[in-house]
Length: 357
Picture 1 (cartoon, rainbow, N blue to C red):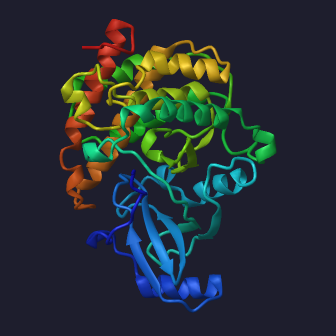
Picture 2 (picture 1 turned 30 degrees about the vertical axis):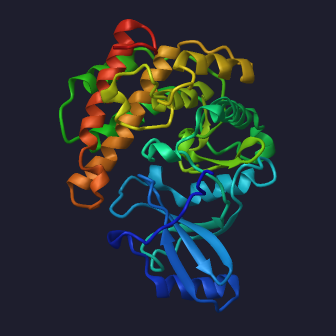
């Protein structure tokens, strides 16, 4: 029996002003129930809390404490995309309230419905990870859901102005280089070489659709019964209108495979190191078959994914290094950044995305 995702006690440095939030919710939800706040402990970026009021349970999302990167923690943007998806894509929680009054809990936040399900993370004990018989259905559900998002009609969603498809790849490279450099704490040769190569090898792909931009197993909630299905896609804060192959590249970057070296697998970016999970090349083929897209320039998109993840990890490590968070999970993340740079350079030199070492 697989465990449902569970909230625990709030980390001391990420405590929410209970009374202030309770007063706000009494007014907005028109009730006078006592509020209990717990925290989902596994996320590395935006913070997620469980709110209990009587028998009702809701979920609150807010930016991490000490974050100064607005674009990666825009609560109103995430609320907007969830609102647009409601009624058009069933695998998302329904948004309920957005609050831009920072006096309530110290920053903007939004509240959405709570969905029950199982989330698989690479950091879980072996006993909580999916058994071999689940792997084919998990992978199929992953690819089907990913392709479904990319097939949604932008106009029907009312998101025509949600992003700027023209020049998307160039802006992504420039943006992630800037974010990485702003959070830089070490000089890593592999990262520097990756930046140069990406800047000189940007493909010309004019296709655009809604992209999640962080599509990986631990952002998916599964309903496990006689059939295994994704019942919720979470963490839409980076969603936009852009190149679907850039989205695939990010997923490939997280797709650490059983054939990768142990030092890479120890990053535990995903559950994809489990035996029976398809290789990165096989994932590309599955996605191409399901979506009907021809996946060209896959090395560029994979290397971009690795660099983007390195940028995300570097920003988290920077917050830890500067004392803006005391979360001990973050203390060795700089080593992960270095490894991702090495892996990206192996892909560039060997002109492939599997068997890099």
